[in-house]
Image (cartoon, rainbow over all chains, first blue to last red; front, side):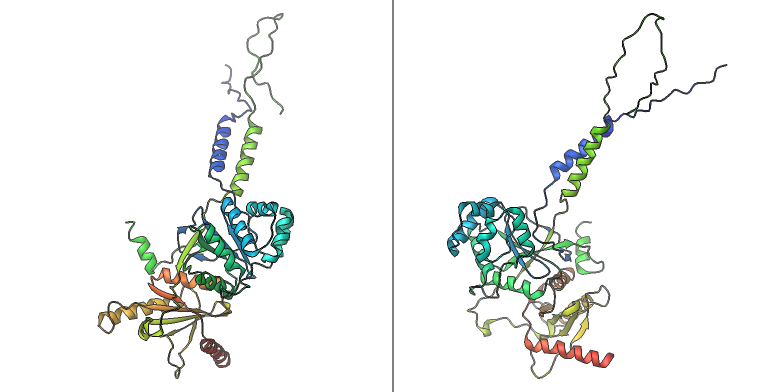
Length: 218
Length: 198
């Protein structure tokens, strides 16, 4: 009697199914991805229970790092172009078209206006190096102060796009006076409504907000 | 890749007849899967799926033409003043501290979950609710928190205290500049606790 022979199995595994899964996931990530915008500085935002998502467009981002340096950015490329035109005209910076173009494709600005021309004239790599040592945009508590360059950035930004929402993204360890100056500047332009970018954290149980978050769902 | 011939013979047509070797129609998909997963990894690391959240704040409208008499006065009994200081310290006192003769009694606390500033805010709200119920305060009165960050406090303190307002559903609150007198209070309280406790 012959032994029942086990069917010899092939050492090959059919990869087709795995390949399908891999490319399905790949497609998902490619479509869902939105590349992280380039950040001039690393900012660790504090957490809050607020769940309002950041708007997709029309935002003016004011980044404050641990040392209190302020970086200014708006998202729309076209708006950036008109903004630099406005700033150029306003402050007589004598920027060339190439320098204006460099601004419109760039990310954040964190240098005083008198250095802007040389900053925009340099290559993106040099700009990155300059960002690391940038002093930040000068700011003051009063909008009328000539040193308050942030005020003119905000004013021109709002004029190019009145729908801009102002978002402050500050590091948790940034000192209060530096944020206070921004708030004062915004108040000076009669902007009383703005957003603070935070991380999400859980609502502590046993509080009023917790009760509210539980109630309407059930 | 080394491949084993596992077909195991099969029929033989005869000693003289040779069959042309059949080429498999299968393609080895392993490198393609490798590539697929490599790209997935890349997109996973560069993507931002979690959108940052924002907290909306409305600062009180400041009209420079508003006269002092026309400004709303908050009642002392509904107010809780919170002073933010260095090392995430929180000082608080009842009332608005407008009595120049009597220094407010500053108490120290932190943003801790237990016995922190939250308990004080909840207690204040309860106190105001009780006052409303027995008719001492009208229905229009709300517990009011005055937030006064001093120069040594950080941005995270500010966000934390604003967050507490949302957590505890405090409807009326305001961020106000700290006065020199209150800076002095903090200094005095610090000195007193340093001298007394240690």
